Image (cartoon, rainbow over all chains, first blue to last red; front, side):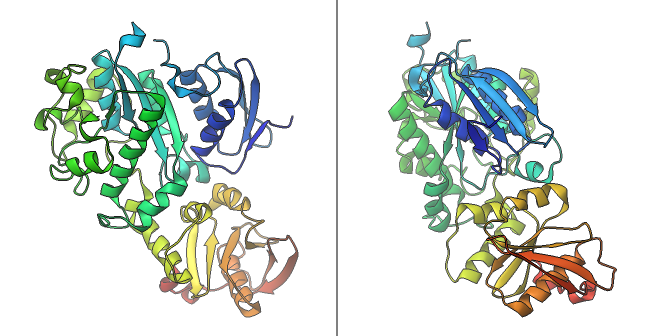
Length: 88
Length: 344
């Protein structure tokens, strides 16, 4: 499967930064897949999704050792960080 | 109600102090969000990620998740260059422009807050903890040069400092802030334990510009170019591998282990690179312009750091950025043929 976002050869925190930038252009409900070579992305991208309210559909390392994360953009989409905080 | 809460934007580094500062704000019922800047010199999980050891994790993300707050990651690599190259207040022990850096980051956070909303800024600074940027006489410089002025609150040392706007306005209860000072970290560690917070490291170590080995390589890079400039790949590659400069006009970056070799592979299309064909060993990148004689030397160094180092002859391949490869057979250098002065 080809990724929507190729973040290979980028190191922490650039994969998360690139996902943040891309998600800012997407609407709620849209799906994004990102492929990374930094193993930390397996933790960091899902962590970012959790605090931003996006759903992680898969987060795994494939046979080639690359990290694949698929997320569904949450309702607080559009990337405007001023829309308020995470409900607590 | 959420919309009536004052909003504090915390500069979250991933270290202990800013984690506690954010926690203190949450305790006062404020709406708290974090902001974190990527300068290119951040240590973070880079070394672990490159070497494939440990469990890399972005410190500020982990802190934000623990606190249950949003975190805004901001790429400032390009703008940060001027801070590194032209610090108004000079450098610390190495190439660390700590005071300029703090003013820059608080200024960026202020600008972000003005664009996206927020009432005041928070840092984890502790009076007297850092020799350059966290002093009674430099705190006002950061507040002034960042443009934050009295919208900048330092909750960990607040009781030792003049009241800021959020304290005077009653958005924050000054009595519930702290009066910490000095380099002793025991109070912070005890506080983190009382809150049940986990943190990456007790102090410092978050910026390569404070690292003697790293900054020696950065100075060498500038000297070899005859000017003080760098691009993003330069500062990434300074974090990886052994760096040897056998001749003034070229340098070798030698992968140490599988993880670093894999990382360096990402640069094969931009640098001349060498590797031993029949033995396990490093991928070696060449930075600079080299001739045929130099290439023999680079191949002999490449052979030296591979498993064929004790063989009389080793086959080494070299390929340019275009991918065209050639091979040569060389005698691996003996240990005494690698002068200490080559190591950066």
